[in-house]
Image 1 (cartoon, rainbow, N blue to C red):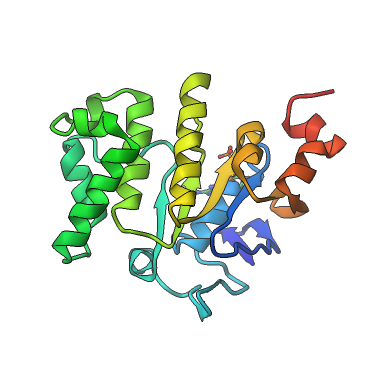
Image 2 (cartoon, rainbow, N blue to C red):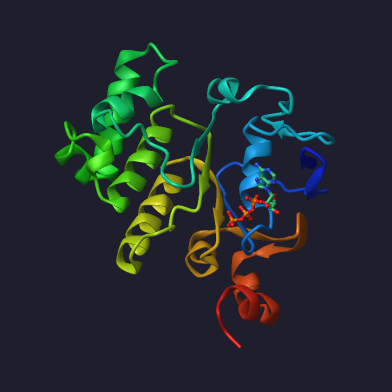
Length: 229
Ligand code: ATP
């Protein structure tokens, strides 16, 4: 697909696949186009050229608000939770389009099992929580739509290393429970640890793609993204 901001050609023929059950990661440096790729998939910045096929159906013209019904949810970069609402209200917002009460309750229980901290803070105003807690809430809110595909934008951003490990353990668990994941990360180290496959994005184009293990051993990837010389 090709995507533009005005006449800036941000994605220059990005092509990628995510199979059911996988964790696929998209790594790349600042400005490579990682967030733009997620925006193009989730309908916020529809590609000007190209197709997005989900579950056998073309969805590149589905508007952003329609994606959740299709089964695609995103936990946004920068933890864009509703800061004046409580934890519970934020989670409820993630399920606003649903009316299967039992299912919603089950999903809320699942979120609390994954993130016990959120249950402890259920009545707290979201904006007053720590960065890590807000990240958990952003992921939890996305899970409340019971998505088939979860898009994660930089879940490690701004978190202390211990917390990054924890969040990634939980992302792995979410995947094991049956949710397919497309993970955008600047922290290639942790992303490639949990991913099945990875793509490397540079200046709006995919320059490499391979099983995660292979990317971890690739000298170029090690030098550019894993902080090794
Ligand atoms: P980062 O890790 O820094 O967020 P990224 O890989 O997610 O980087 P994008 O945010 O997708 O990168 O940006 C890709 C390119 O598109 C960059 O050159 C960026 O300056 C440009 N871009 C992003 N958002 C806009 C916008 N709203 N208007 C114009 N250009 C934009």
